[in-house]
Amino acid sequence: MKLYNYFRSSASFRVRIALNLKGLAFDYMPVHLPKGEHKFPAYAAMAADMLVPSLEINGQHLSQSMAIMEYLEETHPSPALLPSDALGKARVRALAQSIACEIHPLNNLRVLKYLSGTLKVTDAQKTDWYRHWVRTGLEAFERQLEQGPASEFCYGSAPSMADCCLVPQIFNGRRFDVNYDGLPLTMAAFDACMKLDAFQKAQPSACPDFEA
Ligand SMILES: N[C@@H](CCC(=O)N[C@@H](CS)C(=O)NCC(=O)O)C(=O)O
Image 1 (cartoon, rainbow, N blue to C red):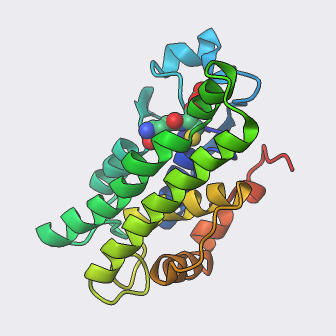
Image 2: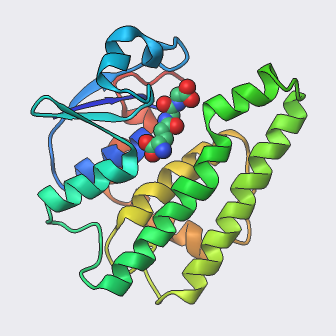
């Protein structure tokens, strides 16, 4: 398997965690986003959306981190990243999508670039935008955790797809000094994850293309 990805990309980070949790070896294929390598013809020919991550398996290219994690779950079910019961699966997917669909699209690179490059908002306004959407999204995440069962991780006593999404979002928010006060369950799940090798090995500073 080859994972085309970038150390700082949250969506790539999710897939790195999932691969590590499942003990699946992969070749790390760096795609330098600031240099625009994701828009080069060679990459666009593999990844039609011109985004990272893209996972290559037996000559097939898979896009979208959530779809990739679902594929890995189906093809390598153990250890599971989803609970076995339908209700638990729906709860974990809802938590994961709260990050991947409600927060991340508003804070990703191309949206921030459009705000400053095209709409000419100031840096301060862009940072306000970022912090607002990440913070309100995480508050909603925290409320969901409050309503769920008492858990060590986001859902239950083992990491799930929800944790694969949460951890990169927390890393990303730290770059913009998002305030994480008052999110005890969210941050407890983050801390539990970061005690595990699979999360440590996937973090940006552990990646071969890391740049400080
Ligand atoms: N929903 C997609 C998001 C993919 C995405 O936005 N990737 C970002 C990096 S986290 C990217 O490739 N950005 C390039 C750009 O914005 O031009 C997924 O989950 O894979």
